[in-house]
Structure formats: structure tokens, C-alpha cells
Length: 459
Image (cartoon, rainbow, N blue to C red):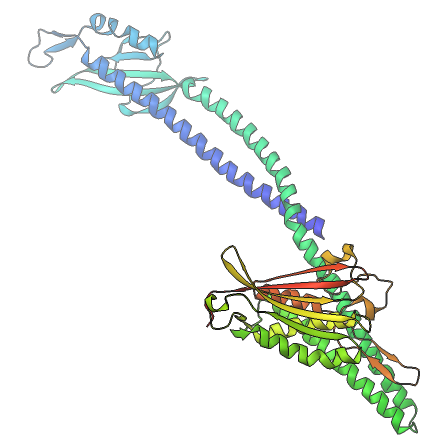
């Protein structure tokens, strides 16, 4: 599919370029040809003027009707240099149209046709000429007709060479454009190919994520329906599993919809003055119970900047942001830290005010003492449904995965999440024009750095 599209794209590049070159070459050829013809016509007109001024007139005996006549020998001898230099032929006709003098080796049998703007005529079967014919008169007396001819090969020879050059140049350029178009089409198709592969992988992963809870719900319902006399306590446990799986499915759908809206640009962010310190306190308070249940210490440290009175704005930790989106961002990061930190470990948050290169920032660090992430996996950590190690269970692969399983006494364990937490965090950071990066060392812990720009004035 992509190869066919690439070929069509390269073909369109080549075809459009060929048409444009053809139009350019045709226009250039017509321009050069018309310029050469104008140059010849100007030369012919100039020769006519020179010859007309140099005509030697003699008085005749007939003073009333034809008082003047042209001395041919005296008149045209002086113009021989002009005709030789420019390869111009002269013909002089009497007032009755009789040829009296000519520089042509073989006088032409063409009739006289007065034309001062120039015309192209056939002197013989294979010989063309550009001619100007003028009526020469003194007063009302017509002295005769002067026809000036210029060889047409002065136009055909350079134009024929020009056609050869244009054809070769056009073919060479079209060939070069075809090669470049094939290369550029590959570059143009590469992002589309990558997007298609990501979409294909995302669709497959999303289908897998949706299939698991649906299958578990269906299994629990079938078990409940298969035994109508089941113990009420067991049925209640099964219904609780179904309820938790339904919540999991709803969260997964919400995450997928959020990312889809983010990709399409339809997410409407509600930016307002957001106290980041108060937001982090609220997130930590909400996650405290989960951390205590896993015997994990969750703490927050606010690093008050020195000389805070000189910082623009009422509160150095307040910035314009979408409160709900930032709440979701830090909830995901803290949840990840808690999930991958063994009992007895720590998850620590710190908030700092930074001032770099004349710009103010708020930086939040989320540091855990968990299992860490391999260095090879860090560049792909924010990809949707990325697996750090496909051999590991899903509850350990994804930093916000849900796993439902039966405990030793028939109870169920459900870890909340959708497997898209870090992808959503990255999308939220991009919406706020911030930066999100991660540093991790295996068996030592992971630190997420969230950098948010803070303008000098906060509404």
C-alpha cells in the first residue's frame, strides 16, 4: 500500500514538473524566436532608411509628371558594404514593378507586396527569407520599390539549436526530478507509515485491553448464572469483581477518549490561576491511604524561593493551568511510584521555583525508591501501551495496569489503572507547554521531572 502511494506521489511530482518545464520551455522558445525576428525586422527597417536617404536623384526632361529619376549605379554602389556585412539583399523595382537592380544571384519571381513590418517568404523550395518592401516616393511621384531581404536561417539556426538544448535540458531535469521525487516521497511517506504503525499497534493494544475486562465480566456472570443455588456471599464477591472490572473498563475508555481528543485537538483546557502547591497537597492527601496500605512513605517538600517578595505575582507557586489536568498528571505519577516501590520504600515529591535565562519555571520532582526502569526502555516510556519487558506480567509492565485475579480464599484483587498513565501525562504536559523527563536506575528508583513555565504575571 505504501509503495503504491509512494510511486503515485513520485509520479505526480514528475508529471507536474514536466508540465511546468514544458510550459517554460515553450514560452522561452517563443520569446527567443520573436526576439530574433524583431531584431531582423529592425535591421531591415534600418537598411531601408539608409538606402532611402542615400538615393541619388537626377532631373528628367519630363518636369510635369516625372521630374526625378534614380541613378542606380551611384545610389546602390555606396550601400554594398551594408548588404555584405549583414547578409542583406537589395532589390529595386521601377514604378511599374519591373526589376531594375538586385544583389541576388538568381532574381526571385515574387510579386511586389508592399509590407513595411516584415514578412517571411519562400525564395525557393528550401530557402526562406524575411523581407520588407517599401514604396519610395518624392512628393506624389513614385520613384520605385525597394525590397530588402534577410536570410531566414539567421532565425532557424539558433532556434533549432535552442530546441535541442531545451529538449535535452527538460529530459535531464525531469529525470533528476523523478529521482528526487522518489526520494522525497519516501521522506513524505515515512511519518505516515510510522503513524499508521502506531495506530495499528495502538488499536491492537486497546482491543486487547478492552477484551480482558469484558472476558472477565462475562466469565463471572456465567459462573453466577451456572449455579442458581450459590452461596450469597460468593455471589456478592462475584458482583464486586464485576463492579470493579466495570470501573476499570470505564477508566480505560475515558483514557482512550482523552488521548483521542488530545490528538484531534478537541480538548478544551480550562486555564486559570492554579496554586500548584495546594494541588500537590491535595493529590498527596488523596494517595496517602493507598501508600500506607502498601507500607510506603509518601511525602511532599515545598522549596520556598529566597526573596519570594521580589517574585512577580501574588504567589510564587501559582501559574495559569488546567487544575483538573494537572491533578490527573500528578496522580498518575504518584500512582506509578507507589505501584513500583516495594513495601518500606518511599515516594517523595518536591516543588521548586526556578529562574533560568530570564524565564521563571516551577519544577516538580516525583522520586521513588522502586525497582527502576532499564535504560533501553526510557526513550519509549511515554508510548501508549509500551511494554518494558513482554515476559513480565502486565501488573509489572504497565505503570498503571489493572489486574483482577482470585486470591487464595476466593477473594479478588484489583489494581486500578488503564495502562495509559504516562502517555496521558505527556499529553497534558504538551498542552501546558512544559517538559516531562525521567531518570532511573535499576533497583534504585525512578525520578520524574515536571517543568512548567510560569509567566511573570498570573491572572
